[in-house]
Image (cartoon, rainbow, N blue to C red; front, side, top):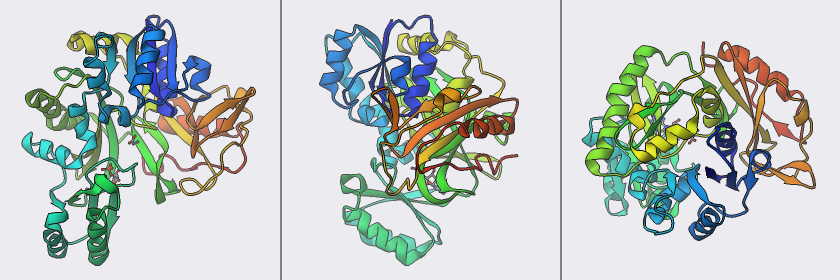
Length: 423
Ligand code: AMP
Ligand code: GLY
């Protein structure tokens, strides 16, 4: 069958890489894609949120399956758009309905959902402009650190963690005053949790689910998890601290009640659920839900799925996911991101990337790259994800760091300590 992947990052290159290995995949298209996806399939220069352009592509290219990479088209209702269109409603689209995507699109909705289904998460209160005074009083009455979350999507910048009460009060007022526009019309203030974070992924049809490999990502720009947040500087799968006992708790206390909740609430959901979790004193808590795969986690999760992904996605669509098996690679996989100098603040694009052809022991997934006159140029902050396998994550990391030595572009940067907090 012909398959279309929507998105343009490292996640989408990793998905393309995996999907292209399937004997069931005939032609593969990526919209809009990057230089890496252009080497695996055909890039189509349209935006993933331009639903009419997506429709034209699907019809012209005889696409039978669409895999939605990023959250924006899902939160904007691409699944519902397909379902409501006579020409598209039989096209398999992997990604939840707009209602299902609210688990990511609204923090207040997600918190309320977790409360209803008894899913462990930080205690919280929700405030709006009308209840600002109560919010200020709530901060005064509680000890920091204060975790302030804009309700809606705020390009990954909507969570503030503040030690100081007066700063927290100022920020609460600014957020409710429109700091993130409509996204911060509501703000969730929640209890600060301290522990190691990890990412669990499930493929579901809203009834059955299959767990995919677990990963841990490294979000901060600086060594030792310091400095500004980024889109992700690296990832490790499997993070050793997430043992079988922890996974049993995750499945019983978090995954099963979440899938049950989707069903009970009638939230149509055929796609990936990303559980952003934290371990506190041996127990897992949900930090956030996402309605898609993670980035950079996908760059280590896909390489660890041995089964063909296409029949699994098809089964999710057709309702027989429960009969499927997912075979997982025993080896570890890690990825280290090469980013543009200055990122996540100001940085330059358009730098020529050299040496890619000399990498033999790693898989290089492209994120912010573009092809121009046969050259690969940097085209974003996060540029390349260098993924490797190893008998353990340390061995895999050594391979990625060795491969990085072959690759160069002006002013590039990467973290040399991915996995620093793991044993
Ligand atoms: P979120 O967008 O909800 O994932 O939040 C972004 C980041 O903020 C998370 O990955 C955590 O590192 C941190 N964070 C969010 N909520 C909490 C919390 N309740 N306690 C501590 N850290 C948090
Ligand atoms: N790695 C975190 C995310 O994809 O949101």
